[in-house]
Length: 181
Image 1 (cartoon, rainbow, N blue to C red):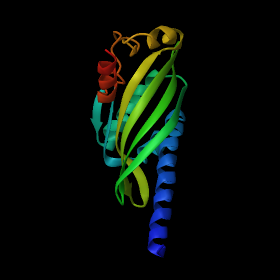
Image 2: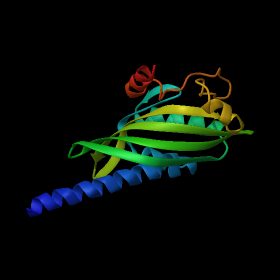
Image 3: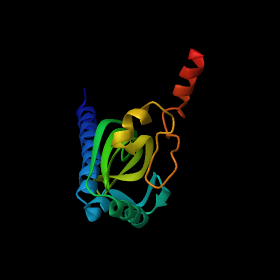
């Protein structure tokens, strides 16, 4: 094995670790209400797509976070699994499965998410270029058993219950269900 191969493999392992840290810092900074720290995790041209639709540009994304955080008491975001695919030396995509616990006062709320991420290394640091949050469910904690048994799993306060983003919309889910029928 050549030294440059070994160096490239070590760099890729370091990149994976740094991307894992990026995802972990996101949840902690969000929960700590460190919006300036959160902004540093995003590129200037970042896009965040969630319940309010896509927000484009770091300032717009941070405005979205401020509006959301103003609605909540305590929050706790925690990533579970994280898969990464490198698309270039300074570019990658990732899928993060996660949960969030939110105090939408006075109601404890729980959300299951799948983030579809695009990352770019800028100035030696990995950042989010885009982050799309797909919801498996979002509901008051007390309603969770009923929510999991149904299809209207998005139950944000002040809105009508709605279908979840995933998994029913996934082609693999649909093919599996067709094969069962």
